[in-house]
Amino acid sequence: MEESKKSFFKNKKIMIPVIALISIILLLSIILSGLFMPRKLSFYVHCKAKDIQEVYILDIEDHRYDIPIDEYTSVVNEIKQLKIRPVLSPYKTFTVHSFYIVCKNETYKINGYYMVGNKHHPYKMIDMEQFENLLNQYIE
Image 1: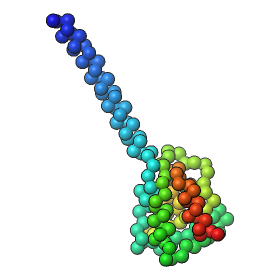
Image 2: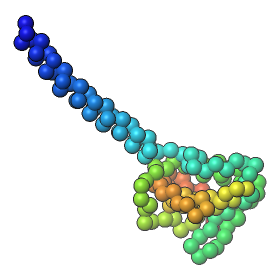
Image 3: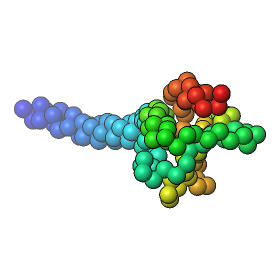
Image 4: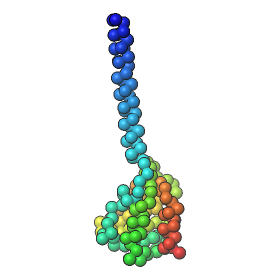
């Protein structure tokens, strides 16, 4: 009877560190998946329709394409619906055209990365085709 008690306690001593290790791995995987899971751009763009002052598209050669005032809300809502995946380091590629959303407090620049003021927030655009279709509506 003493031998069976010893083997039970011996297994218990091994089981506690294994469970702790599995718990730590599970917690880290949940945190990392939460940080890098796809989300909508609205997670970052906090501009309400009433605060929009202007929306325009700017290309590399500084050609400016103004969006009509009556379409500001719909364009910004479409931009906010774009799916992105945050990344740690920015991609070396970017789009030729950038959307600028000027609100009362902030100016948002949206192309291959998202920028508020001088702070860059790198991400990978998942809906790139949808983004390009939205651009093409106003630059042609």
